[in-house]
Length: 172
Image 1 (cartoon, rainbow, N blue to C red):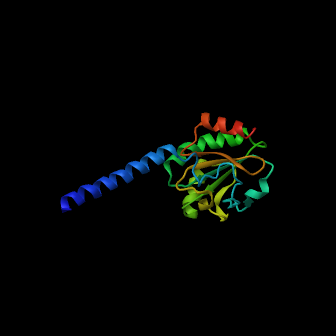
Image 2 (cartoon, one colour):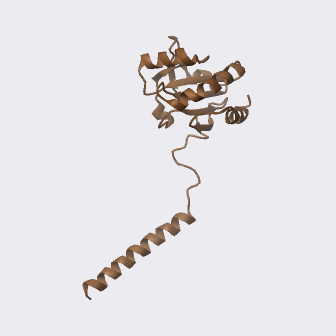
């Protein structure tokens, strides 16, 4: 067998493997991401709030919670801040909002909060991390039900309409 025939046979074999893999992938598509936290217990995290207090997520069991991961340098975080602040005020006593600052300096976080004035506990994680929540970039917002289970998540800035839908899922 000449080199030309061997090349055609090898090329045909590779093509067959690729077509077989593509066909198998289309017939056996994954239904959910194996890394998704949806439907699972929220990872415990504590917030070293900028006002000097400390808040542990585990202490909020029995209360619906909105956990927002943000950063001072994040432009979409600035866009969503008024929406989150208004909702936190409206749902006070029914839903606890928590802001977790990630990848930020203390002075930048304080300066940002002086501008946006979130009416809920905000600060960096004291224990636990945004990595435990599989957050890759802010903003990401999680909705945790009374049992401590993550029921939904928004990647990117929240808007009032979507926020209302997810808050209604919490029974707020």
